[in-house]
Length: 248
Ligand code: FPP
Image (cartoon, rainbow, N blue to C red; front, side, top):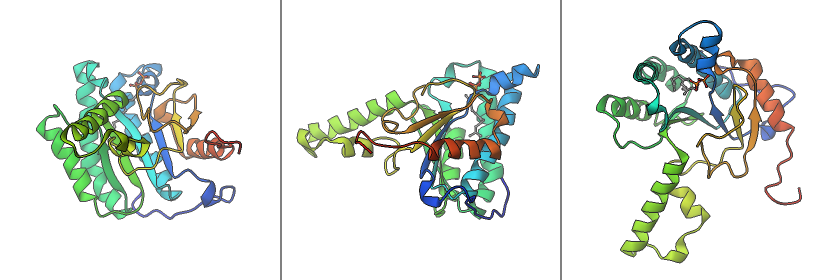
């Protein structure tokens, strides 16, 4: 990510047309590498570069919230060397880029379960969140050890515990309370969810929050994502008519 970014909105988009919150499923690292005769882990390395390009674009276009799916609760089942490579890349990424985030007023928040994470991973998460907590520009939400079904079960359990203790009544449970009991508490729902690599599914990402999100899919593998891809994403989104169940 560049250190001193100018903000701009290209002439074809007005700021009110742009999404406030973009969710991104960065898919296709492994296939990108395999197509080049490389080891899958090389795809993840190239994926980090693509992630830097995405964050640069989000800052440039003054996007308020960007949520990336970096590691799902199911990803632990991948071969150990691949899991270790992804964790290592994340640690390196946090260590090398947090200073640039602060320069660009980017706040980092990690979404997901912290149960069972080892101390070095917990330290990485705490470092990234604490060092950027004063930033007020882009909020970069990193979904890590994240699964939407577990997120909803955790929310259900915390609400049930409050009912059981008498802190709230059954009738107090509504959509707002449920939303505020998720890992994404305080965030607006994503306006658009973008997925690369030609796959057209949510894969347990933001299931509750995506109720009215637009979906944009692209054929390119994640490591090929660049500024032109971002413009195509904005172009697709701004062409949609959102009705939220009403008549428009
Ligand atoms: C999907 O590609 C990608 C992932 C499971 C991990 C994404 C990780 C990174 C971009 C790098 C590390 C993250 C950060 C936040 C620095 P895939 O492996 O499922 O690709 P495939 O579907 O082609 O096999």
